[in-house]
Image 1 (cartoon, rainbow, N blue to C red):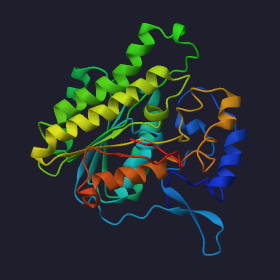
Image 2: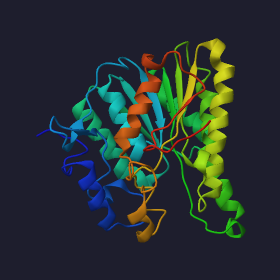
Image 3: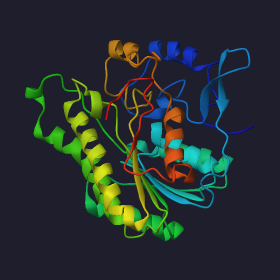
Image 4: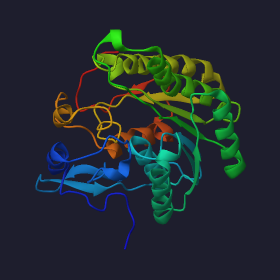
Length: 313
């Protein structure tokens, strides 16, 4: 029996969305508690008769022989990125996650990827909001694999606050440490080891462009990531290192039920023209493109897999 992330996959993404609206969950952030789980290695598609279906992601060697470090890759978008990178031929991936509460998700990600591919997965639990932790992460990656070609700054957190008056300093600091300080620290350290052809891909958000009224500080951090991407791309261009970002629209990940109420979950993803949230694999495909030679003339840009929301940048 083939081991994969999407064994209990509904017939198509629209059926999945109806199930999602009515599922029960716990506010834990643990991917294993969401049934069916967010889709990691299948893409929504249509058959020859125009009927919706899922089709497995097929790698074609776009990242053959590379080594990657991905933060926040135990579940959600990060897990899907790791899976797609492995299917594209990446030889080794360091998966970074916050702490022991995510151990089960991280171990499941490692075992499932290694069962399907020749990619070796190294796990490390550290809070990326502190530079010393980022140094330990990179040291562990280099000790395991010897080199790094791709850095994906994906780890993020968000905290719903409906009134700006209730947004306290510890919450703001916590959100900025994970979403902004971490990518800056991680990139600073990794750049000393990236050779020409190296790639950095950051996770931004549609919230950076349209804002979210209950995620004011989160929206601000994602705006910072967009500016960081643009500025860094200019600094590293002479070193032939490309820097880009992906700004997803609504995506069904464990972060969503951990943040919003049942009523909000039922409406989640209804604002884009496609009238549904993305599945993680749909977002991961953009990270494959930006890490591969297919995007060799693209740097300082943001890709917008957001379901049709028009972004004028």
